[in-house]
Length: 220
Ligand SMILES: NC(=O)c1ccc[n+]([C@@H]2O[C@H](COP(=O)([O-])OP(=O)(O)OC[C@H]3O[C@@H](n4cnc5c(N)ncnc54)[C@H](OP(=O)(O)O)[C@@H]3O)[C@@H](O)[C@H]2O)c1
Image 1: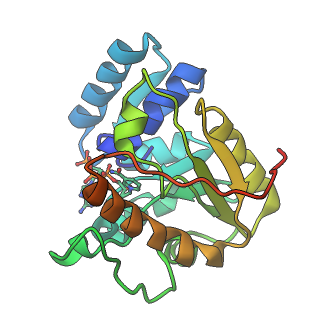
Image 2: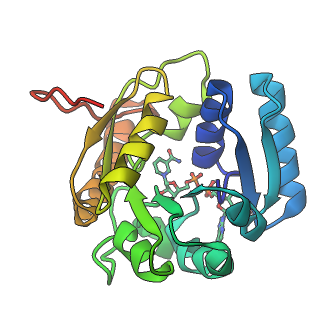
């Protein structure tokens, strides 16, 4: 979990550790990574979480989740690029919010590659499979272990097997449902929804607005 010291990545790490997955929290600082891993152990009672600097975390994992602000995305991928191998799955949950350039969290930036997910795909070595998922899941909700993760998680990728594996990670979040959102290019739409959810949070005075898609019955 690159950037797993932050709210979103830490929340996902907690949930997956509780489910029994082995998690490595990545950070630019070894000390911050280790502290986050210790905090996770206290909160979950699970000792399946460790902390490493991002590049070491990436080299030891099969599925690498990138959970950094959009402004740090390119630099983070540059740092871990040499750790990425063919067959690795990189999950992008980054959203190009306008806050990156001092703007509002209710707006997104235009991304030259089309979306943050496609940008990740352009930057990783050949053979690394990129999936966009969890971009619309509230960190507030993930970190409150007393609550179910009551939302759908849109998952898009060009590789069907990678999409299925990541959908399995969605099912490890109690209450969440994975929805196959098609090709990685749909990350363009998916990422925009987060800005709308931020706006809804403000309008309704909450912190955990999420999405539900009706009229479909996704199977695993
Ligand atoms: N928060 C939410 O509710 C939410 C919901 C959906 C999607 N997201 C998306 O998830 C991503 C992470 O969100 P967050 O709220 O967890 O963000 P965050 O707390 O601001 O940052 C996460 C971590 O990224 C690292 N980081 C910060 N600036 C960086 C930079 N310039 N370069 C490299 N690493 C940097 C930091 O870790 P170290 O300092 O330890 O390296 C930080 O703890 C964002 O792209 C956000 O849009 C967030």
